[in-house]
Length: 286
Ligand SMILES: Nc1nc2c(ncn2[C@@H]2O[C@H](COP(=O)(O)OP(=O)(O)O)[C@@H](O)[C@H]2O)c(=O)[nH]1
Ligand SMILES: [Mg+2]
Image 1: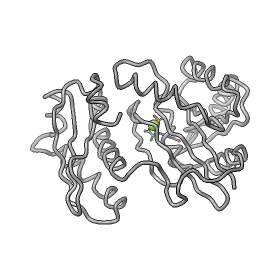
Image 2 (image 1 turned 90 degrees about the vertical axis):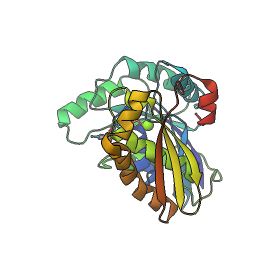
Image 3 (image 1 turned 120 degrees about the horizontal axis):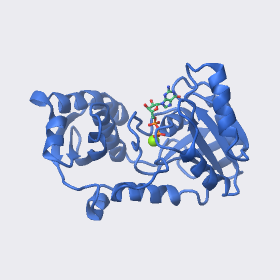
Image 4 (image 1 turned 180 degrees about the vertical axis):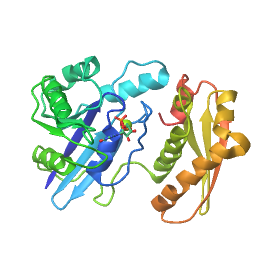
């Protein structure tokens, strides 16, 4: 049996979480067009007949701006111990530059194999992909380089096979039935946050957090937290249209996860400075 950990490194928004979901074959991490969607370390577990591939999905490397992003960067910094392989993700739709070089210096210094995924190659001209592959290749001594699309899943099977080759022999770390280490409650608040991110813009998404208040047989009540009164108005929307839409989008996914119908109650609350205070971040598990 092969079993091991692959840390997923890359700039914010290159598609790390989308790629983890594609490799696992199930949505375990939320994704969005907003940078910094992933705030915590999440394990995505791909189980096969004779392997368990644990993908460590992480926030993107960044310069911290507040306590939240400080904690996120600490999570990244401490996640490269006891791993077997690094999956270094870059985006073929963005210029490969300083941010990627900074990460390359870190990951190539670890002394473990690095597999590069050049993501988002869907609908790109071959010449554009080749240029991206050359730029990605120039950053270090990688084990393999895969052009992939996490959205169309092109190249994902080949990438998974290559990651498996590099795993050591060993026993599984997680139950073979589970695709993640997250509890249902943790996945539920993330799904709600994903829908809130889809419906807000600019700085608002960064101010959103979701807290579970109650989950019993039928009722699920969660608080959608924002930092200011004006953000609360945006989240509530005209006559409650926005918060209602968040519920409409989140409920089917939550019901699929729990395998039953639920009554979902979402309440928008102002919690000033939750991103900037340790006690608040602790309470939110961030
Ligand atoms: N066109 C395209 N978009 C992608 C691909 N992978 C991810 N995205 C989009 O890129 C954005 C960021 O993805 P996400 O997985 O949250 O990035 P992360 O911050 O690196 O985890 C989302 O809008 C995704 O839908 C891809 O292969 N092709
Ligand atoms: Mg992510």
